[in-house]
Length: 385
Ligand code: PMP
Ligand code: GLN
Image (cartoon, rainbow, N blue to C red; front, top):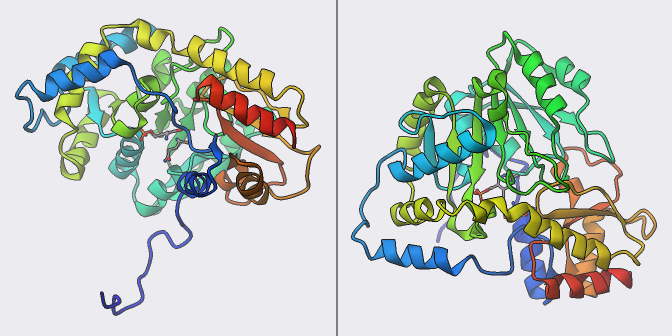
């Protein structure tokens, strides 16, 4: 193939391959236990796979409705109403999307214009800033406080300018495994009152909150719900990250704009999977039991690394456990993550990659969405480091 004949003015000049791809590839090359990229090493429920087979064989293989299959939108609205107390209208306020990454990107593309500012928190999930920048927006970063990764709301207030179009939040939070409290949400609600600032709330780990705490969805807070896109993913909830299925909720006026972009971005989301998910959602236990399921794994992993020199930071939600390694090495986290993968056979994610200017925190992120056997083998290695 001849080379493209001109220099390319990249829209994302500083972006390379995502850390998840890099570390998973390295883990594979070195046959290491992969606790880096966040995905289960066990399969989804057989019942769900059977439903997929059923609907692939049900003659439903042409375009579904643009906003999503109605019975799935209804199940989503029912769930959100029951859990968070806000009634979204399935007709106008719920859209099924090919994953949460897409939902976030499309919400940003719907509203952010060149020159607009979007506030986000560091460390930030790696798709946020590129979504803002590719749409001409300017990311404005507020650092979470280390080591509890809490929000300093005064700093958020200072970051708001007349150009602020949007604020992007994520609870439970990847990569910090922190969660926002009801008090945090009320602070945000009060701060945004009387402004036109829109919230994009990434809640893909909504069902994975530990130690008896409640997930504080923006949908619980009327002053936030009225200005928010809520984004979630079936990938995390049903152990099907490879399906790329999710949904977005928003008030009718915002959703009408979202759908204008959605219909020309992807048009529709996979049909048969939507029918299968709609039927599977009738089994409420599958998502209501998820927090206990993952809490057990978190505790199993924590127990396993107890004798190690790693220091666990709090994991209050998600399927990640951060471990500080101050007592082990002075290396940069990226170097250590690579070395541990190659030399010790266990892969993790260096948390510094989620910062624009990495602070000198010595933290690696480990995914515990794994079988106990995998976690035990991983922990055993960590104890020897
Ligand atoms: N947001 C966060 C915080 C995530 O961890 C993930 C999982 N990769 C996503 C969004 C993306 O979800 P999906 O795979 O449905 O696009
Ligand atoms: N969200 C997953 C993680 O944080 C990975 C998703 C991806 O590979 N893009 O590890």
